[in-house]
Length: 111
Image 1 (tube, rainbow, N blue to C red):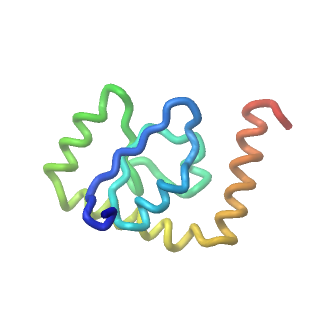
Image 2 (tube, rainbow, N blue to C red; image 1 turned 120 degrees about the horizontal axis):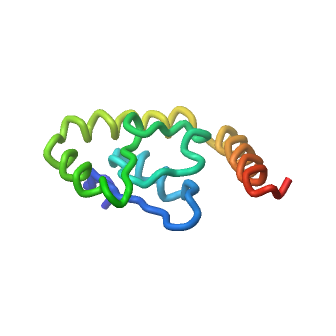
C-alpha cells in the first residue's frame, strides 16, 4: 500500500521524535509532510529538502501545493528516500539513537 502513496502526513502532538514508521514511509518513496521534529537534524532530515515541515497554520497550503506539483513531490521524496537508504543502516541508526537520547536527556536535565 505504501508504494502507491505519494504523500504521507505524519504528526506528533507531545513528543516530537522520529518514529520507526517515518523511516518506512520515506524508504518507500513517500513525501513526508510533518510538524517539526526535535530530532530531525540528528537523523539527517532537513525541512524543505528531505521532508516538508508544517504547522497548524501551514499544513493545508503546503499539502495543496505539493498535490498540485507532483515534480516537487518526486524530488523531495527521492532525497528523503536516498537519505534513509544511505544513512540509516543498523550501525548508524544505533549511533543516532544514542545521540538522540543524549540530546534529549540534556534538554530535559536528566543527565
